[in-house]
Image (tube, rainbow over all chains, first blue to last red; front, side, top):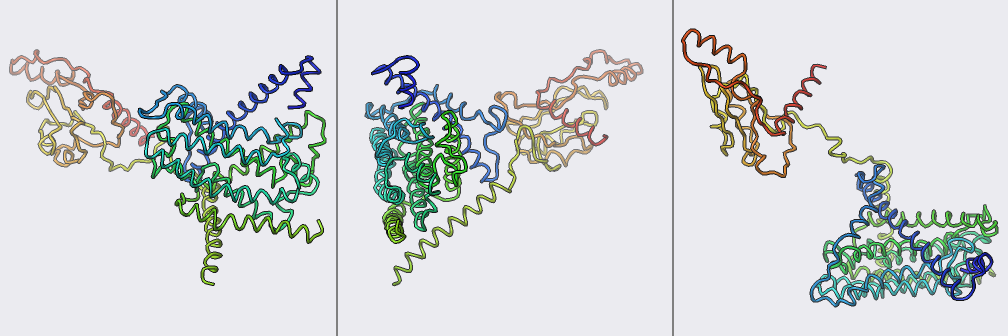
Amino acid sequence: MEPLLAFFSEQFGLTGVLALSLAYAVCIGSLLGFITVYAMFAIWMERKVAAHIQVRFGPMEVGGWHGWAQSPADALKLLFKEDIIPSGANKLLFWIAPAVVFCGVFAGFVAIPFAAGVQIADLDLGIFFIVAIASIEVVGVIMAGWSSNSKYSLFGAVREAAQVVSYELPAATALLAPILLVGSFRLGDFNTWQAEHGWLIVANPFMWIAALIYFIASLAGCKRAPFDLPEAESELVSGFHTEYSGMRFSFFGLEEYVSMFLVAAVMSTLFFGGYTLPFNLLDIGNLPAPLHLLGVAVLVVKVFAVIFVQMWLRWTLPRMRVDQVMSMGYKYLLPWALFAVAGTAVWHVGMGG
Amino acid sequence: MGSVREYFSNIANGLGSTVKGMGVTLRHFTSEPPITVQYPRETKPIPPTYRGLHILEQDKCIDCHLCAKACPVDCIEIEATHHGRTLDWHKFTIDYKKCIFCEFCIPPCPVDCIHMTSEFELATDDPNGMVEDLLTWTGLRPEDQAKLEGKAGGKGAGAAEAKPAAPAGGGDVRSRVAAMLAKKKAEKEG
């Protein structure tokens, strides 16, 4: 954001509201474009991963090479489909719920440092902001479920509401361990710290527990198997988005993949060095400006590694029961997250850190 | 103590079984090639005893109707005019809306002229197109006509009324079977 503003004032002499709005437009536009392309690729990848895990091919027809154009074709189809609003639905809530769900996750990207300087806003409470803004998604899900005037949708929304209280707590607690060590909520600081000291996941013997717990809890945050209770297609048709169709439906699908990217980016930044390379092989942060984009590539590779594990896990495990999710969150994840935080603190005080 | 042990064994079980399961799926993902086939472009071999579309060797057929009588659903209809042993063919249709592919029509044939092929792609969007004519010609072939005329010369009866041979108006299913059989024959010879 700041480099963009400086660029505008230097090159075109733009300042004030005009420059600010132009910079916002550029940021949002490029992010939306990136997210759309990413989501299409991720959906294709998910289908391919699922297919090959199940010893089949997956989409092979559209576009020629291994069905690469399947996702754009699906998106086009969804774009032209009729937008049905069920009778008895609360039209206003039904109408804005997908937007609320999508915006909540989309806003989280504001604080993600894609590379040194490639960040929309370097918030000093970046992690806090992401954890908080991503929770808005739940409001949208409950709005969607309640306004649909369908029992299945309502059940899906109720499950999501019940699930959120059990995963948010361990997720946020697990994130405290790296925050404790780095001593900052600013996401950029994690990159610089890890460029200096090595990846946080190996910083002490408790950190991998925190990483694992954040990973498990973030799966629940993305509503992915084995925590896809809100959409549980075998029980609830398709959960909170049962009554949605066309473009509005596709927003829920988009949201799932976008939130996968968000949590994977948080995980990569906090535990796996973000946009820096291991052992700081290439000091990306101090390279001349255009080469900062290398950092984007490094981060995207790490993010896709995490996303692949998310997909892999989804096609391995069956869906959990509601009570299993609750006991998982409260009886297993939360105490161990606290243990990891306490262990990190004790370890580094004991080591004289 | 029991519940504490249970708690930790739950964690060990959960992690252990997840890792094991992920090992299985990873093995499938990396080392097992897909077992499905890209159907319209490639097909798995169909056993030779498969009961698909029928095919008729019309020059052998003697119009005895044994196949039609054997048919449990009465889907075969045969019409031909006999000029001695020479047949003036009108129709030999199988209604695939009725046919149950039981193969009961095959064994009774005294001259072994009706067979079932491995052709199974019968889907159509036209229900009236499901009645297939198995004939490769209708009426009389030139050689049949010549035979009849030879006889007629002796007896003086009018064979001139016999229609000239015409290709049968069968649907494309029949031609597909024919093409498939021709291909099979070529493969056998080649």
